[in-house]
Image 1 (tube, rainbow, N blue to C red):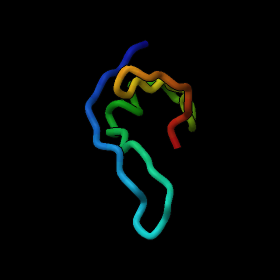
Image 2: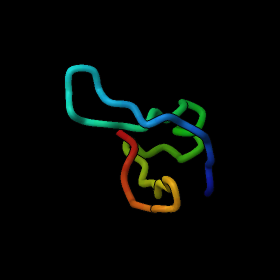
Image 3: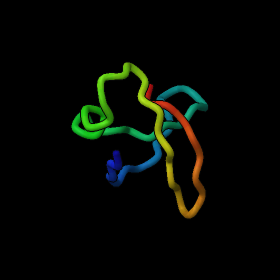
Image 4: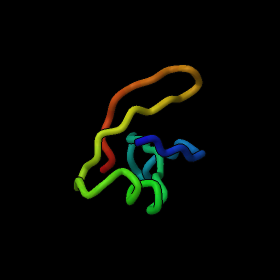
Length: 52
């Protein structure tokens, strides 16, 4: 299944961590898993991760 959306990489307030906010409808489209596995494409670079 492929889900595509645009987002802005943000830094958590008061932390050094960054994240990509994922819209609720995109998470729902990924299935029933609590932490669905995803492949992120960012400026031509791809990496595997999970939705937190």
